[in-house]
Picture 1: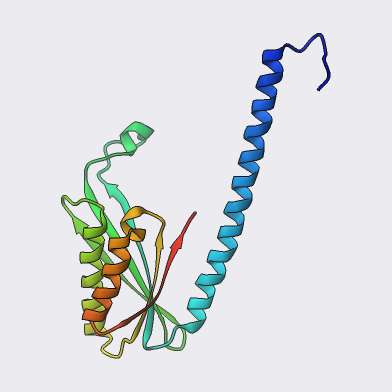
Picture 2: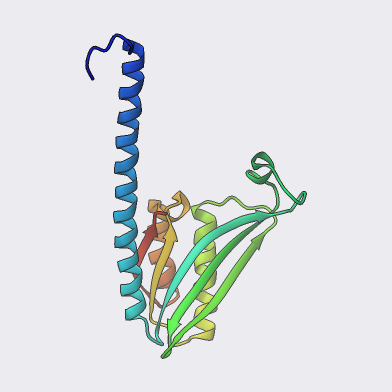
Length: 175
């Protein structure tokens, strides 16, 4: 930028700020794309490894459900009271992909590591009852703290051991 008499110092500072923000946004988008490609490769690798004795468990908290009106504003939508839903989908290959879904509903529940560990333990027990030959479990969860905390990672291994399965992998998606 030259010393144009029509552009003030404040305008130049504002333009430079906008350029820096745009650069940061572009770098963040590129990093997101790279993570997405790597995570998709990891997901496909796990799906290729699945057999009748292994499952991929995909977990997430669903949005609370308690509709108030036909069209809700954002302030009405977020931080809503209502039922907490935790969804776990188990996928195995025998020889084609099969899925089983576990939904845990809570009247009142903290969406934290302790709750997730109780859910994981319950899912392991239920899976072992319907799939006694289950040997290996792969996990895929989002990047929420209730999944990737140290407590969750260690407890997932202990719950798998207690239920007689091997926790082979834990992946965290980062949308």
